[in-house]
Amino acid sequence: MNIKRFRYLEAAVEHGSLRRAAASLGISQPALGEQIRRLEEDLDLILLTRTASGVRLTAEGEDLLPLIADLLGAESALTRRAEELRTAEQPRLTIGAVSLFMLSLVPRLVGEIQDRSAEATVEIVEAGTVRIVQLVAARELDLGLVVRSPEIPFEHDGVRFVDLAAGTLHVTLTADSPLAALDAVPMERLRGRRMITHAPQTFLRTVFETFREPYELKVQSVADSGPSTHRLIAGADSLAFSTATDFTSPAHAHPLVHRPVVDPVTPLVLSIALRDGEQSTRTTGAVVRWLREQRSAIAWPAGFTAV
Image 1: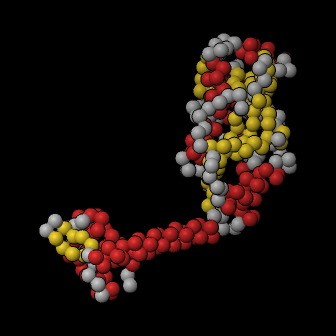
Image 2: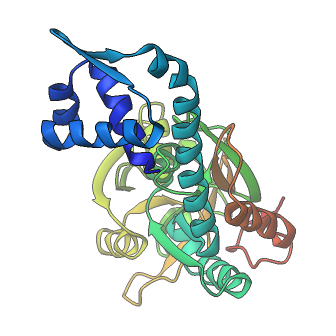
Image 3: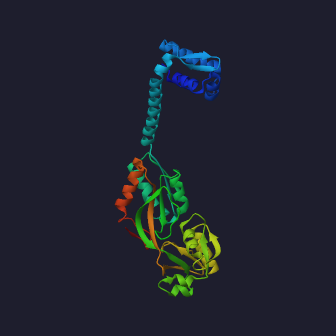
């Protein structure tokens, strides 16, 4: 017995017309009529009756309708489960990561995943925190590795965080800047400054916008990556907010230094971003467990310690 014929019957009943049902299925009306006729032969019952306005179920068809619905529902469930099993055999994981993670953690994480499953496919998307959180919420990423601050909120509906390491906000500046002589830079010393800021949808752009009005900060130029930020700072003898102290400074006439920002101190957290209220897949769950178990052994960027 061909299950597809039951779907043809279902469409005919739903539309009340063989012509409209055939159009919805992308087949000709005669072909649809022939498939339903063959189903009736298989069952040795008349299921549809033709009327001037279209078609309707016979009494026998009405009696069988709940069983037909169960049959089609079971077929859909079987198809979905088979797809899940195929996916489980060839796990695929899409991870978003901010640049802070790209050199220190991501290579080790990818190696760990592929050690556990040689068939695993891992896709890494480098982006800013805000964009990664949006993609996790939209189901375009399985998880994200982000930097954030509990004191600088941003939109993250539908996303929860698992914290891994903590640090504080820094400012990066040239070594011959008067501020470089300080052990830490009070925010008040940055008042009215022109600064290098970062591209939209990044955490450091959110930091700049948070302090921009209260401290009358001004945009000198916009950088789209860590290396370009360093080049702009050195070339313009400027400064920028930063998240870690171990970024490699380019070799030029103005070496760069990093100083913590105080008064206020802005705490930073390196976190996993996951969809809220949703059971993780087996592969995603294994990654989260590994990160939590290994966080004390991971070599975090300078200035960050496991939590």
